[in-house]
Length: 178
Image (tube, rainbow, N blue to C red):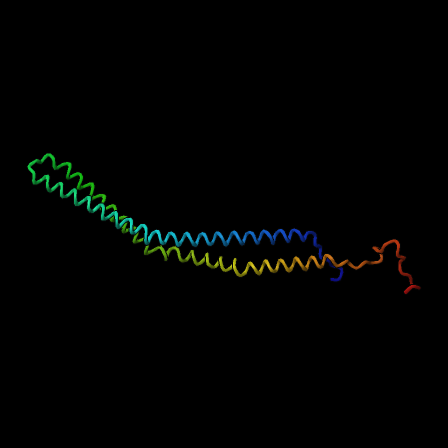
């Protein structure tokens, strides 16, 4: 065990790794923040913007349907039976448009109801990763820093010289000099 020596060939490689780890942590935290913000924006987009849009769209399409039905009713009251075909087509088109908007709102409500149950398990995994990057990895960086300092101190200590490695100016020890 006494004859084993550590062979430290590149403390610079350890420093480069530590530096790259710090860069990675910075980028990873930024990416996690961005993902969290995207989840928040998506939730807001569904719950506020899209809901408001489709509710307003239903009102607009309902007015168009009411207008088309009113025109059909007016055309039927007038004795022009051939002119009612265009109004009937307009009512059918407006009714389809109205049904489409109602279906979109139903789908949106379904997404809003299921958004948290779908996204939360994944978001929790991201939070676990955030905790790992924020708590455990700084400890690893500190450990690498301490290891680097220890290795630098070790490298500065001169290895003990044995008799075969003494400089030529020093005579080898003899039995008389001891």
